Every structure is written in structure tokens, then in C-alpha cells.
Length: 345
Image (cartoon, one colour):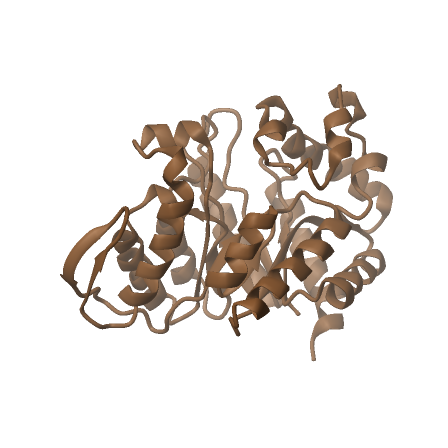
């Protein structure tokens, strides 16, 4: 099992300190690579007042230049918002900077205001997505090709430069239909960080089954989790939990519960939450957050390894509001010293 980090590149409330945050993330990535982390992932959203990263491939180029070994991925790029040839070209450049270390994690996005801003109908998201994945694979082959589809039409295109290797395409999915799509056309499945362990276990099996039925041999599972390791459980709850709670409640305040950020078909209890005061550590943390002392975290990781069967565990350590840079650096170091060596062959 490999280990990654996903970076929350937001600076609430108004994005005034983004240059400093970017420098901190580069420094965190360098340390994480040194202590044994295997991959780094970058999210994407648009028009957020806190500067939520709108250009993950741009940042990925900087991250690739500051690291030597770890894979660099998007988690996720909102593929329907782009022309796939632009994505193919940009990703090829990043992969050359990274010397072949890139993973393209893609998803639908489905935030209506973002689709409206780019004048793309939300109703076209799924069709644009599937067509784009097909185009990306052809574009990275190095061959001249034409395409005539529902949303994209062009003739005699050759994408240069070629990537060092064809970046695997991981698909973000958190519903039955999207998991089946990931199994059919993807090289991997990238989970969200919010849902319960039992949901992750079921979704992983749905993804594997869909891949097997489609005779797709490319099966990789990357499970995202809010994670923190500390000297004591009390330290974790005091230093880290308030920021995770705010991260979760962000989606509640914006009404994302009803839009699918939490899949209430699989976690119906969320519909019963009437007040933010009900979002407590005791109610939310078990089987959802990956946190505690090194021994507690190691035990939880063994469960994911054995019962979910994932190849990657991807941690969001620092949420948009914190903890701070120095605390995050100590957490990365503690993961490297006390946790990751237990999973090194």
C-alpha cells in the first residue's frame, strides 16, 4: 500500500495569504517525500473567495519541479469544464517536468455555478466526461488522429510533447453510476474523504466488479481520508478536530448535502442533522476519520488494507482553516517515523 497527501489549497476567508500558503505546501511536499510519502494530489474549484485552487495543473508543474520521486496527481480535475486537447497538452508538459510521475484524477464536478461560469450545460457533464477520457487516451498515443463526437470535433491532430508515459486516468466517483463508469473506462478509482468505512468498502467492491465485467485490467483504488497522527488522542481532538469539523460543515452551510457531496442514499442519517451542534467528534469520527496515536492509525490502516483492498491511502492533514504549517510539518514527520515504516516491504 502506498501513501499520498492531498493539499487543501484555500486561505479563508479572502485568500490574502495564498503566496505564503503555496510556499508552505511546497515545503510540506518536500518533507513528505523525504519521509516516505509516495504521491501528492491537488483539488479544483472555481470562483471561491478563499482562493480554492482553480488551476491544479499549473500548481502540479510547480510541485513536480520541487520533488523527485513522488507521483503528482489531480484529485480531482473537473474534466467536463475543459476541452480535452487542452488537458492533454498541459498534462503532457507536467509529466515531462515530473519525468513520468503524473496521475490524472478526473471527475464530473457538478457544481452548477461553475458550469454556468464556463458556459457549459450541467446536463452535458457526463457525456463530455466520457468523450474526453476517450480523447485523452488517443491524444497521448503520439499518433495523429481525428475525432467526431457529440461534443468535440476535430481532424488530424497530433499532441506534442508526448508525456513520458501515458498518465493513468483515475476517476472520482461516489455513486453507483459513477463507480460503474470508473470501472469501465478508468485506470483507477479515487474516493472522497467524507464517507464511512463501510461505504468505502462497498464502493470499492462495486468498482472492482464493474472493472472485471468490462474486462478492464487497470484497477487501482485510492482512498482519501481526513487524517492526523499525534502524541495523544486528546491532542488530536484539541488541535485538529475543530478544523475538520469546519471543513465538513462548509458543505452543510452551502447546502451541499442535498446536492450529493454527502451521498445520503448511503448515509441517510445525515438528512436527520438539524443543527451544526450535532456534528460532534463522537458522532462523526468513528470509521470516517483516520486519526489518533501512531498505534491507533496503524490499526485503522490495516483495516483499509485488508477489508477495502486499496492500493493508495491519501490523507488530507491540514484543512483550509488549519492546523498551521509547523503543526502540519510535525504531523508529516511523525507519519514518516512512526506509521509508514510499518507498511514498507
